[in-house]
Length: 198
Image (cartoon, rainbow, N blue to C red; front, side):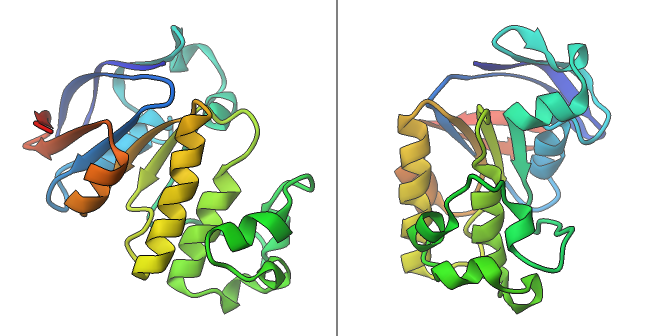
């Protein structure tokens, strides 16, 4: 379980939240209200106050790379450190099987990153994050640039991850997506989380 206790940064008020294994929590709210700030703080990418704990072990007690291997952030626009797609994946990741799961051609494993559209990059970044040992996915608008068919493919993959015990904290501007995926929904307003009724 991922536990937040009075986690705060910048204009984000202290936040308490428990995210259980296999649970998806959706965050909505207007642009600039702090949703991405929360995800980056949770991923230990930005300094913050308060505590984040995974199964009772605090983020502060382990090296940042070790935390991020378990609590993995996928931003709306991911970075790429190689010109080609394949080096961004572990050798044991079966791209011939993975890529078609989200509507990408198996041949895309050998494409230059520059050939990928915005939506293709989004899906590649999500697949890249699905590595062994990841317990929590922090997703920042993971389907914002996708056509409806690709959205459904990504959601099916996320449902599969949830069924296997992974937890997801997801920023989405789509109420319909939140209703399909999330067990609980929150709106961020004035730096505070407000739980929405189902």
